[in-house]
Length: 250
Image (cartoon, rainbow, N blue to C red; front, side, top):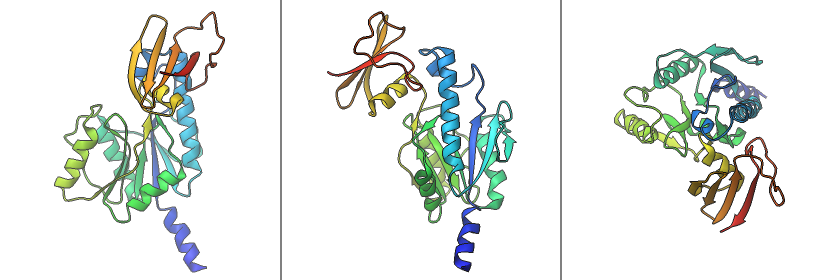
């Protein structure tokens, strides 16, 4: 029917910008590299990138990659990011794609984003000027808009007040903001621990041979820095927890 044809045309006018550095050795996740060997971090970076790319590819929306680093070999349009700092770069990417309709820009070091989450972002733009997917560190992993609004100028990124400052700036401009559920992002080893325990980490300590993490449910995760001699009762390393580890109740 004509109604169905219109819906399909409309759906493909929504554009997802996958805003990501193309994975390459020893790039990205600087904080995680302090506690996790480089090759393991490289594997995590590549896994997150490919996993999220696959999820975004399977939505009904148009997907483009705005990349930093090497050109990605993907079957979607790719554009090199431009700009001197993060805010300017995101602004330029969004402006470029807004000519075709609503845009949602998504970073790459994220877990748990699926088609429903992306759809909820585009749905929010029907009644709101801006949509944001808050990250646990006080920033955001997703930003969307259906006409360009400068919520980027004058904001210092990589700080814990980025989300707050962005919302303040939008409100000063008289724009409405919709917040999605908080995104799980991977910045440091505590984020890997939170994924293993499936719960936020409330305390963290480091000893010579291992890390100890305790979550809000009182579960204790012991993570060994090197392969221990006695591995009985321990879980084997995985991509997202590349060390031997054990979980117990405190």
